[in-house]
Image (tube, rainbow, N blue to C red):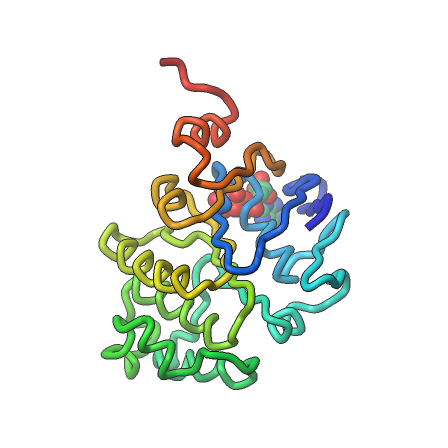
Length: 231
Ligand SMILES: Nc1ncnc2c1ncn2[C@@H]1O[C@H](COP(=O)(O)OP(=O)(O)OP(=O)(O)O)[C@@H](O)[C@H]1O
């Protein structure tokens, strides 16, 4: 994306954001509450209109391309709150997403192989899952579309530590399979552990964009809060 900005009315939630995600890269987007992470992800997915700048994908400007067409081109969003169909089973949620899937390696069987925690739950109503199981189902559902870019909002928000461990085990599987992922994570340690690169937003702008191997936790914390902590 290049010079991307998004607004909520008068509020300039995302300002002049430029970065590219390379194929096979896992990028963690971090920042304090209200930094603009969700708005940025939704703008990339086509769920929120940009106010300026552009999102390009595969060399094409996505201006005016609706969200469903972005899914067809390979951009899948796992939204905040997961948004599963509560009255459908896990398997039905996955199959609905797979109905108009792009060709690719992911189908019901390969997704259940990758996320074995879901196999015994496939007949359970989504509304009856725990938070961690719902997040795993939401990520699995996005995979069913065979995305080339997976956007995951608030990976661990509201989950127990054990559930977060399980979801991150699934993400590690994806990373090892060279999936391209842009995820939003509040938990710095988790973000730094799973991502190849970390981007920190502060009040809508990028204040840090580095490979995780080349950044210290202190540098990330300073960028996150916008100032260095007194020692
Ligand atoms: N629908 C909306 N209407 C008005 N303002 C909004 C709306 N959604 C978000 N905002 C505002 O836009 C700014 C950025 O919000 P956003 O949700 O993108 O941040 P975030 O970094 O994802 O934060 P959080 O971790 O709290 O979700 C915040 O000031 C927020 O209050």
